Amino acid sequence: MDNGRLITAIQEERLSRVKNQGGTPRRAVDRVLREAATQLRDVDRVAVSTIRLRNTNLRTSADVLSVYRTVFGDPRRQVSGEEGGEEAAGQQRTRAAFLTDAGYPAENITFVDHHTCHAATAYFARGTTDRDILVLTNDGHGDGLCATVSIGRGGSIKRLAALPRADSIAALYSYVTYLLGFTPLEHEYKLMGMAPYAAGSKAAEEVCAYFESLFEFPEDQPLLWARRPGVPPTSLIAPDIEAALRFRRFDAVMAGLQMFVENTICLWVERVVAATGIADLALAGGLFMNVKLNQRINDLPSVRSTFFCPSAGDESNSLGAAWSVCADEAADGRPLRDLYVGTDYPDAEIEREARAFAERDGIRVSRPDEPARVAARLLADHNVVARFAGRMEFGARSLGNRSILAHPGNSEVRALINRMIKQRDFWMPFAPSVLAEHAATYLEMPTETGAEYMTVSFDTHADVRGRIQAAAHPHDWTCRPQILTREANPDYHRLISEFHRLTGIGAVLNTSFNLHGYPIVESPRDALDVFEASGLRYLMLGPLLIEKV
Image 1 (spheres, rainbow, N blue to C red):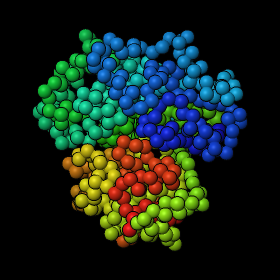
Image 2 (tube, helix red, strand yellow):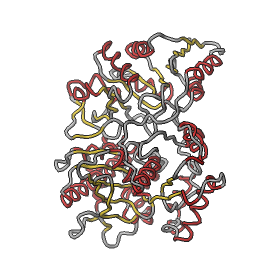
Image 3 (cartoon, rainbow, N blue to C red):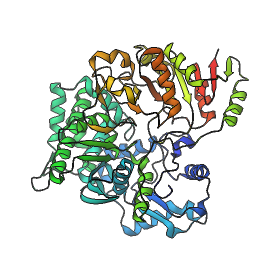
């Protein structure tokens, strides 16, 4: 960041090619320095998210699974609590060693509390400083907490209340994810995707009632919830959950859990809004990656406006740490303009990679005069097209520059994409990129909300659902859109506008450009590797069209 303005950001996984890569972000640090055209010695401050990390060795999904197996096998073996002060200080020295070993002054490195980072991403990315903003964070846990309530006022954040990790609701979601055979801290979205199929069933309501029996809202603490007397800390409750849910249908478990989370968090939001008198919200933390929960919050009559942090999990806490330090040093936090802040490859490098790739049999490379028109025509003819263009998006969502695109009105395209490349579970929906000027045609949007980053779902209008059916949930007809303005991404907007001219549909299906189980592509080489290894036939690679013939 430069005086509170985000210049560049990248996740380590995009460079290591290991999904959810943890550990020291050496590659990412090198790359952001290169993108910012600076050197480490010229950086004034380094901000690091999270003061105390319980598990510094969680580098892959396999590591996470190993921890969860321990928790469910014998919860007493779980690492308890957070490290003490001396231990945390030693850990910080270890985490910063790759910088200090390179000569960077240790006194210029600041470690920022986990939920302070989450709050900063929500508040400063929203960028509203002319009125009070209610800032809410909620996740599994970090630095001993699972949720906070703060007020953002005039460019600073004041915390009002915090909940200990022992009361974590998000942790329960991860436990159930593991119990159902999925990878926790990664596959929670699969439970959310299945939930509509059993929503409202008696079995789901029974599961919801079980989870609701674990918590209460104290009359004298309007900003908090708490475990009921006798309920163990959520870090120790895993075996109890397993026993309670045994022999329950998987879809009822998913629906009941989702119902519980929506009901409980919405009640929390309503109580906090009533207690503070503030109806404009900014929200961050992993639980707010749940777009169906976010939709319920949007629909609350007491809420006037919302901003859900783009990619609200821990991956964005690096931004929050930097914004927080900038605010402490009186630099103005600039609102987030867009998430196209990653690497950008020059046409010459793209063409060099493409020429080498074209030496293979069955590959044709061309340079169309109007790439957007060519891509739109291919999509209008019901082809699936991968797009690699401009600066890479930061975060969990592809927003058009590292994306796979398709005709949203084609009922067969979901299965086609899964056969070609994605291999998604059959119940999981895809999402659309929708031109801002046509959003109201397709979406019911009751509350003022920022929906540029696929952070919230909406109901769709019944009379136009067929036009975007492949990019909506096939059971409840909700969708989580990227609402696209011309200012955010002119080239991508031009492509969809041309598609609208050809089809009358102001949206395209947009899913991330990656092989199943791998990170989103970062480089031209990554894009070509995925193109070759998949059933994709068309790739818009910068100014080029790559085809399998």
